[in-house]
Length: 420
DNA sequence: TCTGGGGTCCTAGGACCC
DNA sequence: TCTGGGGTCCTAGGACCC
Image (tube, chains in turn cyan, red, blue):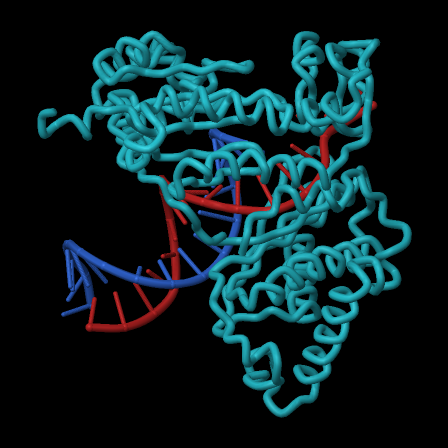
């Protein structure tokens, strides 16, 4: 036992359920096993490995997917089961250590340094987790084990499907440097292409590229970060819970005229979704950002930062409308829009008292002394209470509830929402 | 036949203050 | 009158991730 031992041991796990939504569907309906399936319809939300073999990918239009794979089976999602089974898998990790950082519905980091004396080496723990998730939940899960989060994440990607990769600290750079740059966290299509311009294709080549060269190519922050990651210097620790820094909602519209009758109800619906989430967590936001995407899929954003935070649906909707109106006025040639989005940031804590009692309403009044703030507060409160008892659909904005073409079910949206 | 939805972080320019 | 510098906040856009 020498002093450096703890620092040179690989104790970070990255666990990632394989083709999660599709695997759940194959679990629930055995007749789907071994077959190419896609969750969704108009758009592919997830594809099984059998479907991926044909080039089917998430986010792909259903029509395109069918072209690539004529025998593709489309299934509508069992979203409640995704929630339940994803949670169950995380719980298995939690049985070994409280140091679990959930990244999304199907993915988490864990640091097992503190529980080796109880459960054995990280490798043994990883094998036990995989066994249990398979036996108790019925799903395949891949795990990477390494000294840092970044390397553990890469290892789990390499392990897929249904595998385990343990990266020995003594040989971690040999492992890392032979891999292509796009496996790195933060290297997407654009960065990959830029790196290719200077002949950098592997992480090893990236590691040996001078800092100034990367900085010029990718900017100071990205340059420094990628160099550090390429040498497996990743300072990030496991964060068991972190709060969201922003929240938003968007709606793809197909092709719609940029007119009031489309924009108003859509923005009200989006504001309703966002503001309701804020109020449910006793939070309020100071910055409102809208995004308008045009027919050619290029988009613009407009934002406004307020002196005081807001959480009222009507207030958020009004501000969003103003921003969108101004954005459209600046682009008079754009007659067709394909998406509207609202997002809020600069989130602040709103004491529970203000949810219970209409105090501090001056914040949300443009003209102090008007009764608008009070009315809005009462209206939000009433809607929130009714939904608490009878569900989201029980009440809403009339013009919005009908005639909205939902390309994606609301339950699917909820799966992606982070805890405020 | 043009591509869903919810997030994080970075950059660059400008306003404003000291 | 012109000159310099640092820090913070806001805005718009973009890359990336699941």
